[in-house]
Image (cartoon, helix red, strand yellow):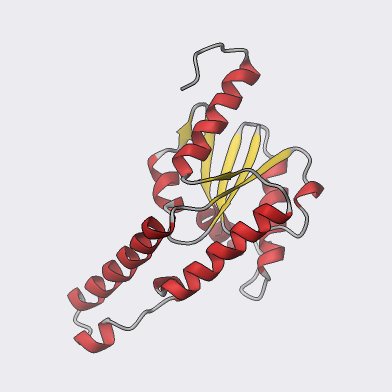
Length: 179
C-alpha cells in the first residue's frame, strides 16, 4: 500500500515522520526530507512549481516496492493519475491548527532572541508559515481540493495513519478487532 497524505504546514508532518519511521508496517516519510534529496539530485529546483513537486513526490512513491506513506503539502493536478497510490487529506481542527502555527512562530522568535537578534527584529516572521493567514489559506486549499477530488479527509495525522494501519492489517489478512 502506498499513500500520500496532503495536509497544510504546521500540522505535525515532520514531527510525526521523525517519531514514527514506521507505523503499522508502513514506512512514514516527510516530504521536506524527500525534497532536500530531490534538490540534491537535480530532480527539482527552487523554481519548480508546487504541482511539479507533487508529481515528483508521487512518481517517487509509485516507484517504491514497500508500503510507504509520504506526509506532504503539495497537491497533484489530478489524483486519479496515480491509481496505485491512495491520496487522502488531513485538516486539523481550526483552533489546534492555529495553536501549532503560533507554536512555530514562538519557537522561531525564541531561537532568534537566544542567538542575539534584537527583540523587535526577532518578532518578525521569518517564513510564510509563521503567519496564520498563510497557513489558514493553505488549509482551505486542502479542504477544497479534498472535496473536489472526493478524497477521504481526516481530522489528524494520527487518525489517518491509524486508518492505513488497519487497511494494511486487512490486506495482510489479519483479523484483529478495529477500534
